[in-house]
Length: 326
Image (cartoon, rainbow, N blue to C red; front, side, top):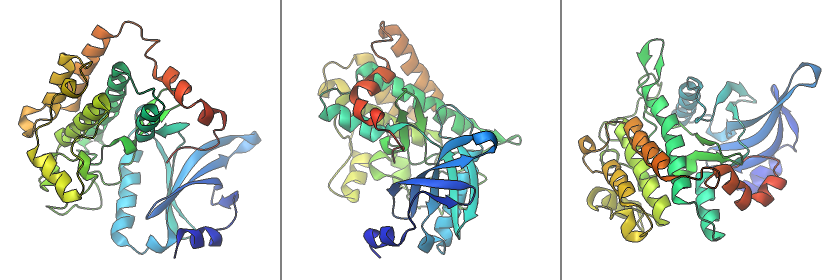
């Protein structure tokens, strides 16, 4: 069935969906669809949310359903300003769904791309700020305990697609759908490789056991790419990309962009060591060095405001906003 056929057969919007009203379809993925929705309460109370539901014909896919349940179960335990919040998980019309926080903004991939295309790329300071904010949420997830026991969460899919930037300049990590956690219902088989290959750590590419330093490597890739405006390991095929991850030593960002300070080169280098024992011990240590650099080098905080950047680059989107980004 084509997406057009699916859309033609879908009931018109807005429409009731359990306790929610689906207002507008935001995105259709391979296995799930995403809607802007709202919930109503007493005395005219309304709250905008995002509904992510499994496509009906995938409800029979046991492994995918379990992964979806894992995403809800893991993320519902995470309450942090830099993580997209989960409000609800249930079944309606025969499909599992998640209700989550609506972010008035776009994903970081779009922020990077639109900034470059419009000739207003993120500054070095704004890039560092974004990485500081993502690191706060990620370190929280890595160290989160539930009922006195560590969850041992490893996100495993850190990339610009999985971070949201609001028009107000907030940065939030999302999509823990393939996260490895001690208490998840789906047990990942040894040697199974998941995640976007261009942001994988060498140990993830090899299917080795992972800890938070694997996510740290992905943060290092993102920082390198945002500073240089280029892709780091991406090849013409997944095989070539994985080979680059395993074999290639990244040049310092200042070699690509001479405006990059040498002390940032050192932070990037330490986060991208092939041997994880040579990286930062954890994401918090990485964030600490970024924070030290930021407040030692940025004198005009208002000029480097991420909110100001978003309002300059996405002014038309803000004026017409009636949903959220994918």
